[in-house]
Length: 282
Image (cartoon, rainbow, N blue to C red; front, side, top):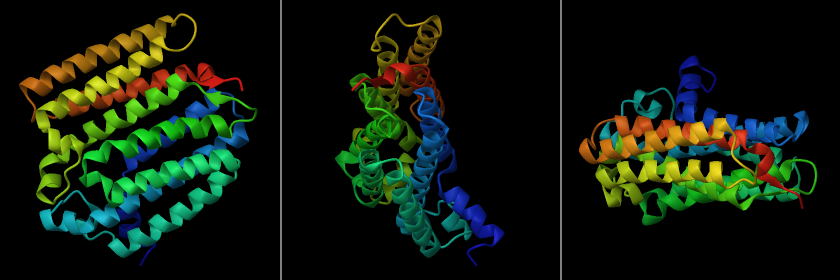
């Protein structure tokens, strides 16, 4: 039964709840930070939430055979909480809601966000197992920044540095996010970029990309960075260096993953702090 407590719990788990909340919160904070207004920010937030839910449910629906094959006990399908069929229905329902909500912000931003979500679905469906696994993350994160800016009132456009930083953030998060499941993924035929280059290089690549994104956000906006930006940027660099060193010395430790995620969090905070400079007058 779709509304049973077990199924609801399974749907929450299958939505990849932590990254879904983080990406949605980022879109909300960025939209509010550029002064989009309460109504627009609410629409942007709901559209991004619906899109993220659709991507998470699509991922676990398509991955269900592989997860069952390797006994991924952390997955709700393997736990028997939800069926692949229920995830398929939920993914398409959330995707439809995403389309409606996205176009409610306008034609141009709606198209941009739909393409961003379609890119993430392409990752779930095929690209995650190829050398091009990084590309949907670069495209989707970059277009998320574009969507937030275009949805805001006025004729502003996103600053190129912000789009580039978002793309770097996306690729770095992708590489870091694969680290805990690298072996399970490889065993079931999922061999994206991190799997092909190997664990040790990936544990170094993730913080390098995320650190580069953080530095870009600090130095690229016009004007001198504030003390908070300098401090956070320095913290991102230090965390990234430590993560990279641990990746070389102890590649199977969870520390490089945790530290890389910390760098990603710092980068998101920096982007939100720099929100006024993200919009370039048209």
